Length: 256
Image (tube, rainbow, N blue to C red):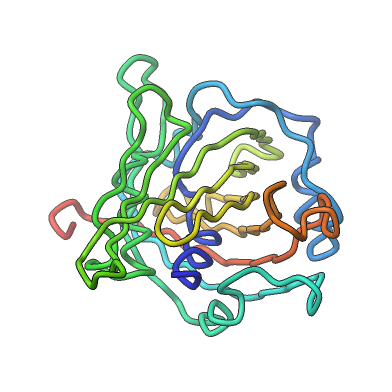
């Protein structure tokens, strides 16, 4: 299951949160500094949902390609699943996502449960992922139910709980949108309970408004949680960095 944890750790956040503006350019500068990240980003505490620009609205096919994978503290510290995840380098993975209007505000938000399930099944397979649920009390808390084998060889469920704690965004140009989120992951299942922290910093760009297409660069960083025995060695430095190229194309609802 450690490979499963690693996969979910670096693919899991096209999903949730509200985003407050930060000083212009801070997130763009962070992406430009990749892979020389020495600490976590300076973000704000979460509150509510993430509102996207209007040009996100609708149904999309996304092709995600892992183009780089770095373990800055290797060989001393490497997260579970890193070597297995490197096998996905330059292997495109496609899945459906959608952005909808929030019922109360009318602003554009991610359909978190749909997108989370689509993303997880694209990487792990339909049979491995039972469901993705968003906490009705908090859009910042998401639970992924995974199917696995118990010690008694009976099929049982395991849970990956992701909670967004901090986030920020900026829009350098009308056709650009950059977000950064820091979230806590907890994997519940026998025989171990596993924790880590994950950052997703993503720069989206609207390529052509007349024939809508979007592209994005995304960097996912894995940090050790205080429960990890190597936490003091790593501190706030990322122990793994994954870099992706994303391509969005409109999806017909009839082809869902």
